[in-house]
Length: 581
Image (tube, rainbow, N blue to C red):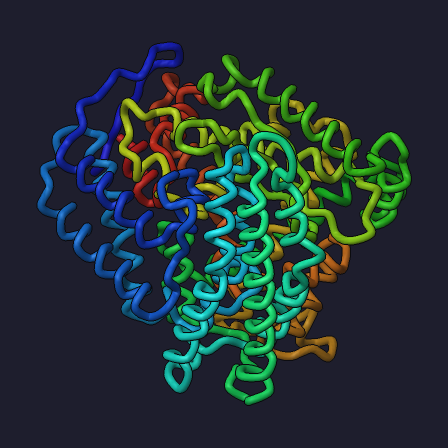
């Protein structure tokens, strides 16, 4: 049993002498960043800013070998204190599942190389949003990385080629290839879009101006645009038109079981969780119906949402107004919760709100850099043509992405450099822990009165329903479960597929169709991740009640939050072992 104790509410974290196991973990960070520079930038780790990641089979083999060596070193290192005990458990769980994925071909398999959310295409595209632009050296790193986009995408194509003809679950799908090709189209013009906007920020006058650097940047942008164009051609012609991409979107129950465990850090009963998802959808819909009555007596949920959307007091017009609202709400929640319900480190008390360069319609968070010089940021991705924003549905999102959600979660662990090694602070990320906490944070803010307004409550419930529906469709589709009667008895298929997924989402969610189209693609191309939000929240809530029962009258919610977040992101089984006596 792993157990840990942490510092008190107002006591400073005692400096802790690094242990042999910390040295193993820190070495793993250094070697991982050298082998995956794009990941290093995302994590806020400098030193590899102009380099790119090798997504070829050789690149994946090198990272797998590192994981295997590190796991062996973890097993050999002594455990000298309770922090080490959690580190050892967390590294064994994370590295163990990484090796299982590699053995199954699910880490660098072809399907992982072609999807609309997490493939090398999106990884390299999004990394540029996080790179600093304040020095000549920063722009040189951007130019260097832009010039190597072709290498990144060529490596991905090589990994797809190695998967063709093997396990069908590892072959990219027609649906993901076509949608990814459309993303390439948006990046293939060096004179427009994200690449052009990126270079437009380079200094063209003043002390930092350099004609040679600007020429290098323009050349690198042209090279990157050509690489994206070639990747799009390959997706359409070499994969789809040639008939090599598969048409079945499901990965199957065995692959899904492993992918789900990777996302949660816990094994779940897929059949039971699927049934719970259906029950949770019904429960939330009933609660939404009650809330609709409070918005306008006699109104259905759809009618109540229309009332909220038509209320000018609940709308922001233009992205400037949206950013102002986001920032003010974020600042207010942080100021109110710090020192009352949470212990917020001083370094974490800056969170900036920004409009994202992408246009998928989502909202997401990026963590601070290791030294906090790059602050945590909340990004809103605005679809083309959208100029008016319904705030009633997004108040809960600010709490999810900001405080007490992802920002508090990331920054609290990051600030514990005196207690946690760099792997625990920077690289260990488990979706079920992180996204589950963020949903838990939304519900907590409702409990604390921040969502008492019926419109804001409807927004939180609608977001919860959205996540519950994802449990149903993601597990159902990829595991090929039988569809519920509402589909099978009304002309739909008896087994889940992409059409059933879309039918169910449209019947049980209230997102705009363009957003939902992208979401459906996301679930089909990233098995196991979407349920980690709601399932993670379920496991967080269950753990809290287990700790409450174990501690009895001594249970303190603020202390529970502090102890849990001080551990950093770990698998949910490891979290339970660390917090239960």
